[in-house]
Every structure is written in structure tokens, then in C-alpha cells.
Image (cartoon, rainbow, N blue to C red):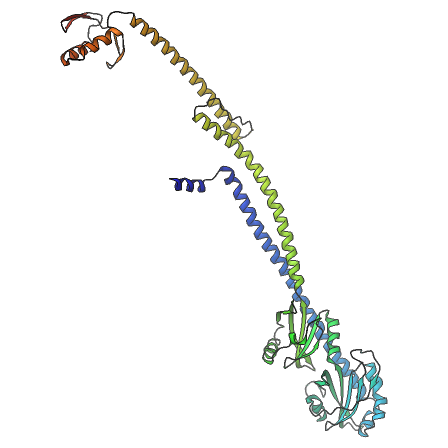
Length: 468
């Protein structure tokens, strides 16, 4: 029984709860969906813009690579076609080579310049003094480099030509510092190849220039995954290094698209875009462009918090409005219910008293009118009852003053009234069954009212008269 009552109470709670709860649930649902949608839209929009920025940075870096390549090629052409370079190389006149080539190397901001013979033997070398200051005009002339291990330089020495021409690139580490070299053939007066000229730039400075142009962090990896240059702030080379298998997989992917990888670098979330690092259309490694993504999370969080705060305020406002509106419905209903319970328990003085100009007001007025009518009917019944009691009392008094036995019956013969004499006779004749039968026979309706009948009972003579 208690369980069924609890179940009914659960299924049919108070009207106030049934009115307010759907609004609150709807607001909570809308708020949740709104916060989720806004957060996703903001994060998605930021992510899309972020990806576009990564692609733009990668394009800017690639264009800078092309520009540096063009600068090296222009420097090589200027050196190759400078009058006297071929003769000085043939004569291995280091002083003349220094005089002819130093101005070009300074103007084109080369970090390394190396001239060699067709067998790869180094003849002359210029090296910019300093670290990464490309504007420095100070050069020294250390021992020249032998290039037998440089694949591109040897191809130049061997007079090889590919679809792009007779110039080739090499990534070379000199004293543990990586350099990018482009080599071009050195020609004699008759046009024969007498050696080669390799113009190089330091990859670290090269990488910093890429980062400056790309407006993002940039790193360069060789085909084995080793870091050649790193312009990531406070990020070590070991965090950017890849194994050869990963480089091979990414290199295969970059033929069709530029993959974006999420990676945590020193506690800062980054998105890294991998693109091919090509010189003379030959892929010599990977170009890595990265941007920190923490601002996306922060912006999404701010948008989420603002949206949540907005919906929280909306929730409070709607809740207060819903409660206020619900009270305009539930309060009159409660008054009506209280009035109905009071009337049920007999209190006809209770009134609903709702005077609103709506259906509830009309119902309240109808209920109050019915209570007034009921109260009037009750008062009439009480008055009639008192009147009947007075009449009955008067009748009792009249009957009590009659010495003869008087019995009043209803239409079916039931005794309604009897005076003391009649009750005494009934008591007297109740002891014997025959006398009892004869006595009640006297009370049967007669066909001749107002005519007395003579009856002998228990040796007594009675005159019986019946009247309607």
C-alpha cells in the first residue's frame, strides 16, 4: 500500500513540480547542447584557422627555401662567369681566387665557399667568421675541403647533367655544424669542366630565416631523422628527432599531403606540419613547421565558460520566471484544494477567495457559490429538523396526555409513535404468543376506518378505532 502511494506520488507529483520541472529540464538540456555546440564551433573555427596558418607558414618556409636556393645559384653563376676564376683555379692561385670571389661571397651572404678539382681535391675555401650573423663581412681561409664524399659535388666534377641542369645539392656536416651546399661546375676558357664551386649556408641560420619568414617555429630534419636546424623556442633537438622509419613514412605521405601531428614539447602542446625539404627538386629531408595549440584550448575554454555563464544566468532568470508563473497557477489551485478539503471535513465557512480574471478565478467563484448554496441548504435542513423536533415534541406531549392507548403507524404498518398506555399494553401482551398475535392483528389496516371494533384480550374488553 505504501509502495503504491509512493509510486503514485512519484508519477503524479505536486502541480507546482509538474509545471516547473519540465522548464528546468528543458533549460538544462538547451544549456548543455548550447555549451557543447558553441565550444565545438569555436574550437572548430580556431582549429581551421590554425591549420590554415600552419599551411601558410609551410608555404612561406618552402618559398624561402626556394629563395635561398635561387640566391645560391645566382652567386654560383656570378662566380663561374667571373673573368679569371677558371685560370686561377687551373693554376691553383689561391690569392687570385680570394681576390675574385671574396666580394661575391660577401654580397650574397655565403657562409662557406669551397673550390675543388675534378678529382674532389680542395683548392680554395672561404668561411664567414662568426656564428649566425649573415651580415658579417669577415672571412677567413681555412684548409680547403675535399669533396670526394659529397655526392652532389662529385656529380658536378664528373660533368653529370640532370633535367634541372648541371648543379647539385649536398647536406654536409663540417665540425659538427650542418651546411647546405649547392655545387656548380667551374669552366675553363674553352668550356671544359676543370673542377667545381660549392656555395654553402649554415643550416642553423638558414632555419632561423625560415622561421622569421614563416612566423612560426621551424625545424629541418635530414632523411635519417636527425635535426639539422631548430628554431623552436626552448625545445631540444631530441624532442624533434625522428627515427628513419618515421621519416620514410612521412616522406611517402608528403607526396600527396602535408600531415599534421599533435605533439607535446616540454609540456607545451604543439601541432607539427611535415612538408618535404627539397633543394633542386630533390628531397633531402623534412621541413617541420610548428605552432603551440594551448591558445586554442584556452580560447575554447573561455568560450565554454562564457557560454556556460550565459546559460547559467538564463537558467536562473527562466527558473525565477517559471516559478513566478507557476505560482500564479499553483497558488490558486492550492487554495481551491484547501477549500475542498475543509468543506469535506464539514467546514462550510472556508472560501477559496481567488479573484483572478481567468479560468481559475471563475472556478473559484463557482466553488465559493456552491459552498454558499450548500451552507444555505444546510441551514434550511437544520431549521426543518428543528421544526420537526418541535412538532414531534408537541405530538409526544399530546399523546402523553391521552389515557387511551394510541399507536401511530406508517404506510407499511411500522410503529412510528406510541404513548405510554400503548407501550404498557404492548409490554403486557408480549409474554404470550397468542396474545401477541392478537394484539398486532389489531394494528393491521382496516377497511372501515372511524368504526370502532370490540376486541377481547386476556379477559379484557377493548374498543379499537383506526383513522388515517
